[in-house]
Image (cartoon, rainbow, N blue to C red; front, side, top):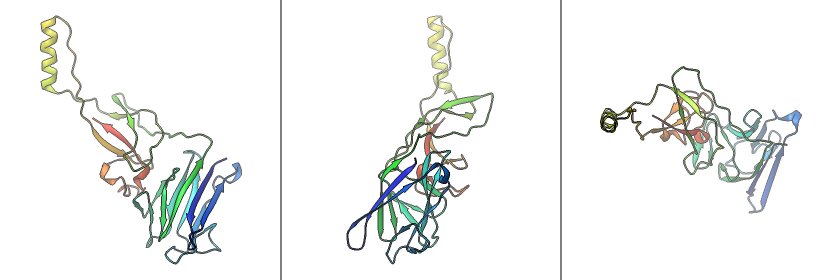
Length: 219
């Protein structure tokens, strides 16, 4: 049973908590967070919180809870980033700020964690290694290797040096592969490559908040 717990201090500095548990027949349920007690399942009684500020949903294909901002003029802050459009995955320990009210994800429980990867087919692909996201964004689970078009380029100087050594030793030479790589973000929604500088920003292609985007090294 997917479950997520949120805790916060109310205006009287009293610890409050909210537990969202989903049964198999209500995995598509959306939970509203805001100041309007009639329209929100999670009610935050503070003037800086919008009437319907955000919603939490569960994506079965990703086995994760996601947060979406619903107040364009009063965006949510999460783990140091500003969430205006799109949605971001929630992890245990994530800090979410609605106006002046700060919530923390105290616990997340799902059946199984997996991350599907989209990749186009090609006859000339080079496998890439997936690395964890950069701090302070929580680490995402390992994902399968993906492929990109084009083979790694060989450094002419390194290749010539390798051929010279091989020739002097009477063995067949091989191209020497460079070790440097350029890290990029992979948008989990549209799968485009974006700069690491957009870690706490929205994807310029689809608008998805890139805090949960995986970092990958591309030659």
